[in-house]
Amino acid sequence: MRPGDSPAAYDGFADTFAAEAAGSAYNAHYDRPTILPLLGDVHGQHVLDAGCGPGLYLAELVERGAKVTGFDQSADMVRHARARLGSGIDVRQHDLDDPLDWLGDEAVDLVLAALVIHYVRDRVAALRELHRVLRPTGRLVLSTSHPTADWLADGGSYFDARHVEETWTGGMLHRYLRQPLERWVEEITDAGFIIERLVEHRPAPAMAQHHPREYAKLSREPGFIAFRLAKNAVPHPCPS
Ligand SMILES: C[S@@+](CC[C@H](N)C(=O)[O-])C[C@H]1O[C@@H](n2cnc3c(N)ncnc32)[C@H](O)[C@@H]1O
Image (cartoon, rainbow, N blue to C red):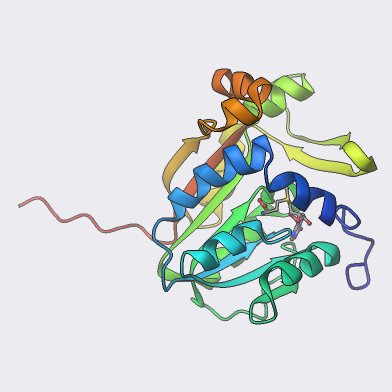
């Protein structure tokens, strides 16, 4: 349970999610191969993983020499991540809708927010907190469901903004926000970030062998979208 709140949506599904996401089309062959290169060389960097889930990204980052801190709304996910990473790693239960009052200003070099922002109630407030804890040269890398994919799945007008509910395998109620790309960009820039790169995921070649149906679909239409966001504008040299 979240302190004083209802159970988090992913409570009870951490083990199932972890087992699936380790080799799934959408996580192992689509999101991680897109996001890890966007993070760049993390060796010696302090990376905050917001919505870290069972710690699959944290493990990759530690292997690449990063110092990591992770948090997740779900106590079960936190337990799972701690078991994966061992006691030396700081993984805590925290809701991205609450202020990160346990982190000082400019405390981390990089923030990763993979597949979590569409669950957050006040995205601008959450993004402002991530902006605050980043060093001046820091970057936030985030991925979410592609607005076109949400529109194709949920129907109506592409420009609709609403919460969508689906029941996933095992009975998990999945409630996420769909909104047009223009709105995502507004929220990101309202929080103070500068969009450095926008990437529409492509399936990794290995997906063709392991998940041929998903590979065909994701080669044809987008599933996820990613942004690399800079805390501050990178100064360009003045033309002489
Ligand atoms: C699809 S999983 C992604 C996990 C991990 N980032 C990854 O890509 O492997 C979404 C995660 O976000 C977490 N989550 C959802 N809403 C959250 C919130 N408001 N604050 C923190 N974590 C949240 C869930 O508990 C779950 O672990």
